[in-house]
Length: 180
Ligand code: IMP
Ligand code: MG
Image 1 (cartoon, rainbow, N blue to C red):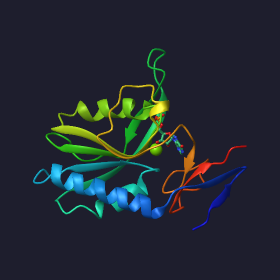
Image 2 (image 1 turned 45 degrees about the horizontal axis):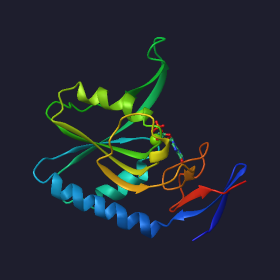
Image 3 (image 1 turned 60 degrees about the horizontal axis):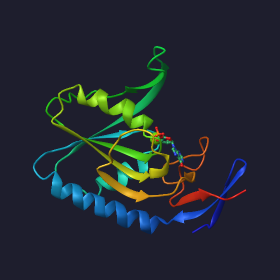
């Protein structure tokens, strides 16, 4: 395992190893297997960052389930709503479905604050969130993560799907930015 990586102008040091990530993702899978037995949940993975988490998590599920991938596109709303992120790519009918949103990281909570109402207004049976990482110190909105991999301090991290300006998503471990 490489202890440090350089992406653009920044150095990053190892923070969570692939093995630590795998064992936590397996635990989350076991919780979801138990909670969603006979409920055939629909996972909605938010691209790009969640692709590795989604792929590994679903391999630990032994219940019937479906998965769909969405992207967020920012658009300038009215003055009062500011910049809102809207959902693109979701083709499934969400009515009466148990939806589990898959996120890479919850930072301020803005993304989920924009996203969750767009699911809930479609008469879903339930909407929950699974996120690999949350930074509680950075949270500015009232959002709840139902299945959480790791709680980390307010540091910038890359790897396992997470990027720094496009780079780093391919790394199998998670790295945090080194102090300047
Ligand atoms: P939020 O909307 O502020 O909760 O931020 C969520 C999004 O910001 C994530 O889906 C990431 O794309 C990005 N983000 C936040 N923190 C990090 C980080 O430490 N590394 C890489 N991306 C991050
Ligand atoms: Mg993201």
